[in-house]
Length: 207
Ligand code: ADP
Ligand code: TYD
Image (cartoon, rainbow, N blue to C red; front, side, top):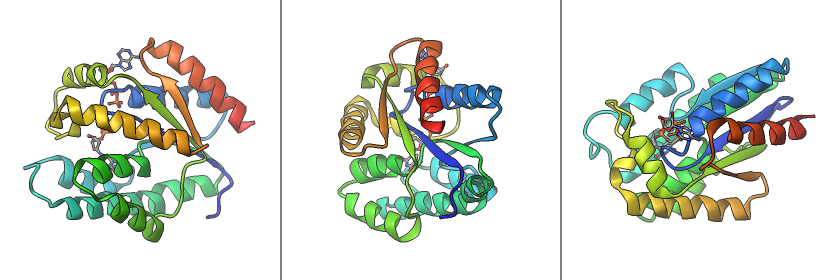
């Protein structure tokens, strides 16, 4: 990939504070004078936002596990083509709220034994990883109670309950232990304390 910019992702269970931290990092880097593209998955391009509606709204049992993996991957492919690659090519810092690790965890773990399918599709259709991934880590019950305070029409995997969120947290931590691009961040602190940590790590990585 033509890649002169930097690609940073945020991952974690629902309600971990990823979106808050992605936004605060984007603000801090813009203040530092950098060209920043803040984006999210599923979504991040007009086509991928349409696919987001297909997967997160309506009857949760509308799609089979396999179809769901294809939809998340299709959304990611469009996001990569239309938003991420052009931004990296012009030298921007791309900050995404979720990327392929979310599919590895949510579809790979929660919908049966699809981990291998998820990995194969990733190699075939996406083939890139972030330069750095912040895992905002916290106990599943804290994430769940934060997430439940949000209202909305989107189905989220938080609806699947505490046991699954806990399994997902363990899965993220295991992945982070294997992949050097991860930085595990204690998400139980105040938003500004967490942001100060993340900004310092990101600035050290970017210089
Ligand atoms: P995510 O994107 O991981 O689901 P959000 O950033 O949307 O998480 O945060 C979920 C909820 O928790 C929001 O209501 C947000 O205001 C709140 N929140 C975010 N970070 C913290 C924090 N460090 N401490 C307490 N509440 C937080
Ligand atoms: P998101 O908007 O990030 O939700 P939250 O703020 O609650 O973390 O993502 C919506 C839901 O989509 C969330 O439950 C995680 C799920 N998801 C997957 O299952 N697979 C994926 O590949 C992605 C990107 C998200």
